[in-house]
Length: 421
Ligand code: KE4
Image (cartoon, rainbow, N blue to C red; front, side, top):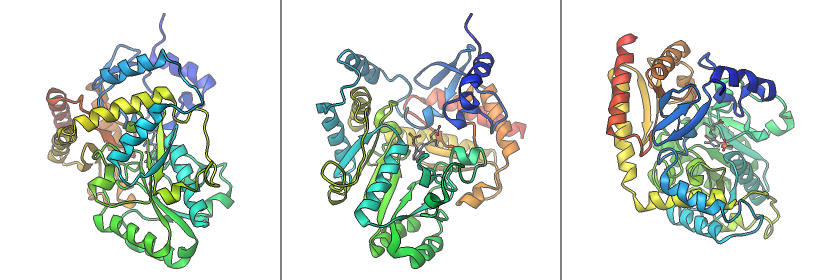
């Protein structure tokens, strides 16, 4: 007999911490046990208990074309028959790099890796190697993966679990991580006035999406570009979420700001374990084997993951109207939240409702959101067949598969929830 989610969870807890391979999946923020997934197709995700949900988590962003998108699946199937991994260069890695460079001209050179964590960790190491400086600036509530120096007041799963700094990170690592406030120019200015010549880089989510979605003030983003140039530090745009999400050229196209380095993940791998870091040629020339900054990986540029990435990017490049389609669809959801009196932040197909009376423009504003109300919302949506992120500090993603009927059903559900509060 096939086990149900409750039994699978109980059994998984014996072997895997929290029964899950990434904390937010445990549904602890919403005081529930998680469903276990059987499969997904298009806008839907199916659990092992026979339930079907409209999925707005989209695997935390990658599924911009919907789940199991046929052209990607067909290409991956064909690639698998040619071998899963070689540990040697393939033409496909070059093809993907060219597609990325064509979409994001600032990425003059790049390295393919296997996770956003690895991309951000490597980009910071390159920034330190290039500038010969140790300190970095990140923003409270922003999340750049789980490498040691970045688990300081990070967002996403740490906020969900109310962990401000992960244990196991030596204070000697954390001391080189300077913290500023998102959308607060003064907080950045004061750090540079005090440490400017020791700062290797700023790493920033150009749209914060790991404390819920908090859009940047454009003057804030522009200031980051100016202050880093002024002090000889590098600007790293962490576009793991925004890359290929806001536009083909990501947030750097959307806001017309050119970073020195960029990290990509999620969409760029089409749902497979693939991420990228890259940027100015003179900086990337520091990377081994041509430079002294070391980074390596057995499955870096894996041919199956690269195949999924190529097919995804090719479809996005050949169908640029997708971005206006998903923007419009997300706009309908935004209006529904506003109509029921819930605050909402949206940038393109990325959005988050907040259960607070404040306009959410900062980490402190996010923290005024009411968790009990969020849990009521999550429960209502899930019981209505709609799966949104099980945490206030995650984003909602709209995909090409969320067609008008799906969006209308979701709007109806949001309106009904509004009647219940
Ligand atoms: P990964 O190592 O999870 O592939 O990427 C880390 C990362 C880096 N930068 C940004 C802006 C990110 O959002 C992420 C990872 N995002 C979270 C969800 N917000 C992944 C989900 C999870 O941790 O389970």
